[in-house]
Length: 444
Ligand SMILES: NC(=O)C1=CN([C@@H]2O[C@H](COP(=O)(O)OP(=O)(O)OC[C@H]3O[C@@H](n4cnc5c(N)ncnc54)[C@H](O)[C@@H]3O)[C@@H](O)[C@H]2O)C=CC1
Ligand SMILES: O=C(O)[C@H]1O[C@H](OP(=O)(O)OP(=O)(O)OC[C@H]2O[C@@H](n3ccc(=O)[nH]c3=O)[C@H](O)[C@@H]2O)[C@H](O)[C@@H](O)[C@@H]1O
Image 1 (spheres, protein in one colour):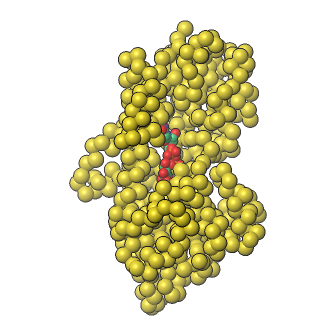
Image 2: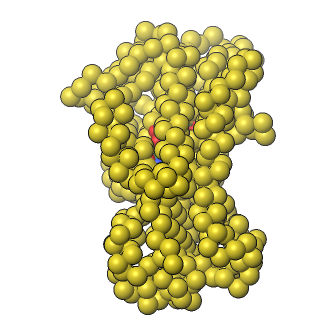
Image 3: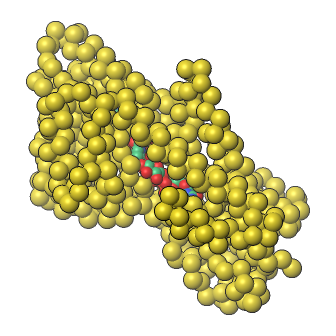
């Protein structure tokens, strides 16, 4: 099938590449000429495991190409995916300007029947706005072409995007157009060969499903973070509690890990956008209000422990920090808890030496010229002279360090662990002061 993907970011690139992998003829468009140049030269502008090889394979096979040419792109695909960003507006609502601009581009150049598929995360009712924008462009040209609107929200996780796209738990398709339904069914059939996992519904329900999924996952995380903070005070161990409740199949083990608050490009913005939508309709989502508040507080939980240990004046203190990205296996720094932690430490007089396996470049871009922040390309290289090690992201490479070596390198054998990577009992035996989240603290 001929496919166009408008927007070549995390979602657009993965969507286009995975569709090409199954033999479709895909054009990926972006307005960012630099991004397209990198892709045309064989590079990949983001870090996503497995993506580079898959892009190379499909480009060589002639099934995948990249362009900034809007007219050519729109003419190419029978199915036009919109996968542009929907960042938060000043009031927290989803800013739809990129989605509407993409819809207008389609309307400006389309001839003949097209299926316009919204993959960006958008508030309920956006399908109508996309339809109106395209109709308006068609009317301006006096063009009488029919088209279908589909909502096909994306559920992939960064760092596992290829796996999630190639083996989805479910594919949600919202449309009232039978031809579009058939085309979408054929397009996705190879991805769900063993199971019937395509869920058809109306456009509005599909749009709502996406927000509901992210809001539910964010709720679980904030709930666990609050229970972790309580467990710590009460002398319970959140890791045991997590296993104790996760074993109930009605609860399940996923997304119950406490930490330094959820970050990334989606949970924070989608929770807020859903709240805004509700408020605009005179409804208050009290649970989500609390989820967001709890998350804001959780981003300071490590800092609170540091202040409790060292006092509020951190002048002259030096911290080693492991993990910058908002989660492992990505270089994405959007809403990363590390930014809040580093900002606090620097603004209270400390210096920070940070390591991340892939996000240093991105960190330098989003935290340019931050005085007192330096980077090193190995975990051990940031340790010398540090008053403590602060762990923010649970990269695999941080799970089993040589603790004797860590102890020798650090000025003090002291670890603040925002991801509960180690066993407090073992840390005590190894001679560390150890401050995890919701577990026994090993103090001096
Ligand atoms: N990043 C993720 O893991 C997931 C993101 N989503 C949603 O997917 C959407 C896209 O997210 P990301 O891929 O992370 O964003 P991104 O920011 O990585 O990529 C968006 C791309 O769209 C391009 N763009 C903007 N306007 C354009 C236009 N008119 N024509 C062509 N290109 C245009 C931008 O230059 C950018 O490269 C958002 O709504 C997000 O909430 C959904 C599931 C997962
Ligand atoms: O809409 C989106 O963009 C995507 O948002 C999330 O994916 P992503 O943001 O890539 O990453 P997650 O693995 O969900 O992690 C989000 C944040 O929650 C935190 N988290 C996650 C799980 C957990 O148990 N505890 C926890 O603190 C992570 O550290 C991270 O900061 C969803 O998991 C995807 O299904 C969705 O498609």
